[in-house]
Image (cartoon, rainbow, N blue to C red; front, side):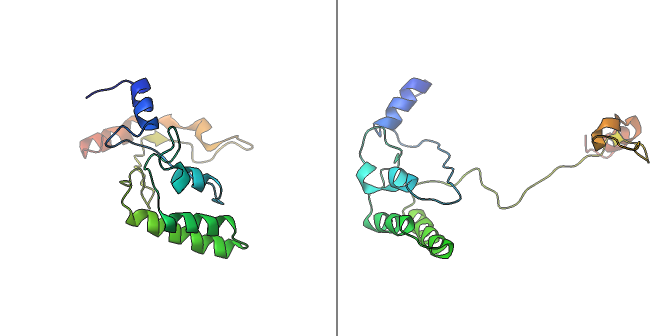
Length: 142
């Protein structure tokens, strides 16, 4: 069934869905937000951020360890352990992640060999180069 945004939100709040998309952005120092997203106390709480319904004693213990970490090293170890446990529960399908940054680069611009002194920004003096564009079209890049 196709649903509108309001109905979709209501279904998420009441756990009435088979699959949904969600982007989880964590802070550089994870802590209290982990309880609301993955803690057992929020697993069946309507409208909670724990849309996967995670209720797991190991997850709860690791969240507590993360919150009490006394050093960055201890925090990193605990967060990595939590990550492994959450992955083992198969509660999400990873998407929007790539460990590499892909760039496409087509040089269709010309620029002066020497920029004017005190120029502000290297793109101020670029222009579209018809010859470069024609070459790229001839080799199928454009």
